[in-house]
Image (cartoon, rainbow, N blue to C red):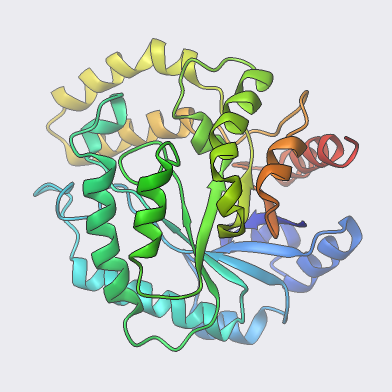
Length: 310
């Protein structure tokens, strides 16, 4: 398993806006490279400035409610433009010679993020996503792996093996696979309150996929134990969302809730190595949400020490 960490152009300032410093950090700390968020990338600048072999994976742009089925008049996206934008991102990924790209296989109505039951089933959303993905990939001359990441909303969750496999087998691109996000999978069970409970839950789900483990090319490794927050805040924030007539205010409430539910914190006490051994991914990306370099490096050290000493 090769280790990466998540990165974006917005955190390049942590390294004095110098890509070579990122390379040096990877070499000093024993990382194989980075998984780069595509948002904010300038195509020409990226090709000219980013050193060869630094970017192993690219995380494509993602939208909460991008499918026509889950959008409303006030947040409707132009699906043709979304498809065109994805194709441009994939072309850049190919030019940067990444090993894989990551696609969020989910779409959910804004009001549904506050609820445990969703308007549309996983299978309905996955059927819509397949249609869009096949349009995105049509005629593209690329070689990287196209990985689909789970969320805890309608779409790919890994809670139903049959649905997950049916979905991926409908994609008109040969080099496909899964990327399991451990925190997102933990978010499907708000009753979890400890790392031990979370890891046991992950094992019980992923052991069902052992006979198809070769499909799991990557992992986003982090924990999320936000059940108590959801219990205490989702009704209040849902009421705020419904009562507001202002679009920007609605977006703010949704973002506040999601950012607190999806914690992206390091495992501190219990090693996730047994979970990783179930599927044996090629890449493990330590994925954290931090606003300071010092905290990010601390999170990396905490989780890596736990992972590599067990």
